[in-house]
Image (cartoon, rainbow, N blue to C red; front, side):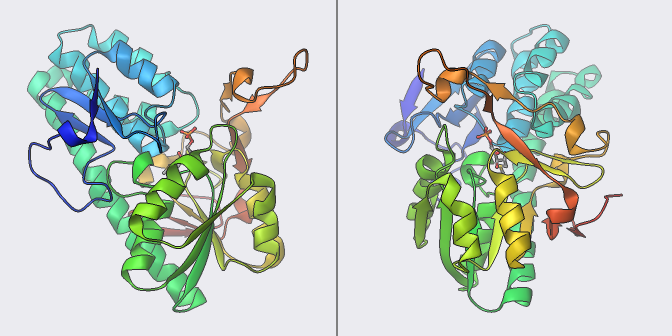
Length: 336
Ligand code: MRU
């Protein structure tokens, strides 16, 4: 079932996010989420009653972006418990709905750990994960903005990739959380963003967010991103992450790695903005991460031509200037 924005009511009357509602929320024991496949044309919310529908929403990228996936995993376990389902079996389905962002399994496991304490405890933990995402990403954004202003000066032009905005989280983005904090400090210049083929998370979602935030922005084709960097049109590259491994490698949307190479060559900061829940100390390096390969039909190859639709790439740790989290700043070196 889908509802339009105008009929959506937030039970607590929360205000202050970019479009007056959360990307994903828990309302009347249901998961309510913006259907991101319909943006920017239609702002439509999904009211999701079953884990099966939630898994489907995750697979088709109606709900997407690492922190939002973590929250979806957490709320999905709550949904299963409220519905009286086989919570462990449904949790296993949720955990593997997409393979690359570690946040999904993190959110599932965190809430599943409360199962023995009963349904109320499960729901309380899931709602905590939801609320905590806002607090943590807001802190992360401010920390990242401060770091950039200290190094670059009072006006920062940023290049970003994919969508690491409020749409990828609950209310506050990660990379776009930094952008939002720069804007609040009156320290933001222009934001360049890649289209982010093939599903256009940049030109469909990030551009939509930036427009509503009143941020000056310019979209370029993905292959132009490194040239924007090389020509000195930006002062820093700021991206999100789906998984950061123990050695500091960063897994993010395909097309991130060339931007890191360009930033290193140009000598500007390549900054990764991600909550602590994106750090996966159990995985040694980027080569060990399961990179999602999506349906070749998303690329629309010529008939008879095989296509490889790699959804993510790995940026080696030595190309990362800084990882900004909700708790700390890690400078391009192994984590610990
Ligand atoms: O395939 P998607 O749209 O889920 O990929 C999203 C990204 O790659 C984001 O950059 C990442 O999840 C960080 S979002 C804060």
